[in-house]
Image 1 (cartoon, rainbow, N blue to C red):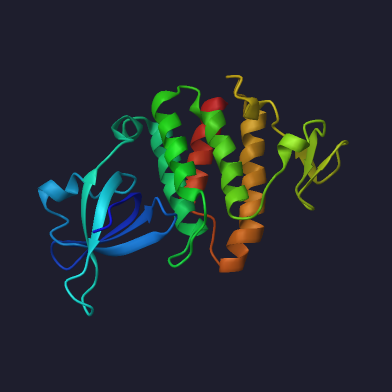
Image 2: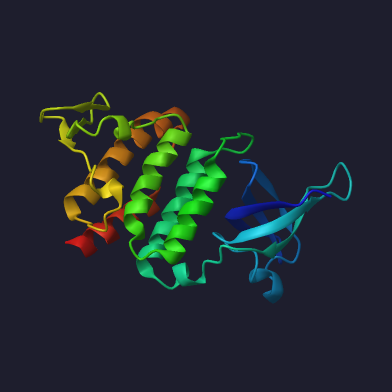
Length: 230
């Protein structure tokens, strides 16, 4: 029987004690199925959104839905759940995963990118610059790369044509090059620019194509971080 690892990205109570869940696997695919008695005290300690698990998928017969057996694995996220800013970041990350990859799709590299950023959130107190980098990396993974590493000499980014510029225009903003060098200097202008650029590209390209709205958790995270920096 194949053992997978993955992050739980969706749970819903069904019937009296069972859960329907979705897991993004280390093969960059979404697996969905049932956790029988998933609301029991023992299983509630495992099957929570954002938890990483090693799991197997079982089917009693061809006509029955698949169900999961799982155990917790690293990275553990208890410290993230206790920190308001990291918790909002995690909820935003989960919401973006649910809109970035649909069931039946495979997007190479998305799982390892998530595992890496959560590891950084766990151990690095200057995690916000890496989180901003992850937002741009997510855009790259789903096909909307911002090639800022080859445009270091261009100060501005145009929100209309999604390209770098050498001079300020009505539709451009200062690009946060310094933030993405992870020099531990976090400022309001650069972080706000990351959110604005990411939302602009993600909403008008990816979300428009699948007729989704920007997740509310994105705005909750953005507002919380910006308020703190102010």
